[in-house]
Image (cartoon, rainbow, N blue to C red):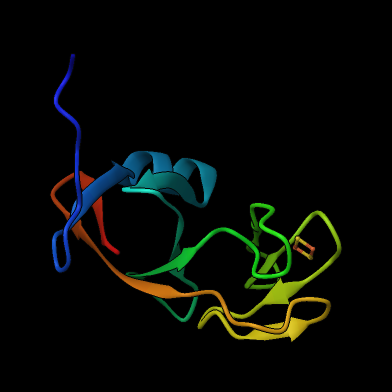
Length: 111
Ligand code: FES
C-alpha cells in the first residue's frame, strides 16, 4: 500500500497547486481527517485563507462565493466570513481557520 500522508501539528501539507487554485478560485482537500477549503484573500491576494470546510451547523461542505467574499453552505443557507465567523444562521459556531502558504507551485496548509 502507498504510504499515508499524516499531518501533525505545525506540519504543512500540500493540498493542491497554485494553478488549480487560480483556475477554480478555491481548493478543497482533506488534510488528515479535516476537509479544508483554501482561497486567496480578496483583500490581499498574495495571502491565503484556509478554513475547515465542514459547516458547523450539520457538516455540509461550504462553498466559496468569490463575488461576495464569503463562504456559503448549500444545505440550509449558513454563511461565514473570511475569518470563519458566522454571518448568517442557522450555524452558530465559526469555522476553524488554519495557516496556509504558497511554496513554489504548491499550496500548503497546516491544520
Ligand atoms: Fe450548513 Fe445546515 S449544514 S447550514
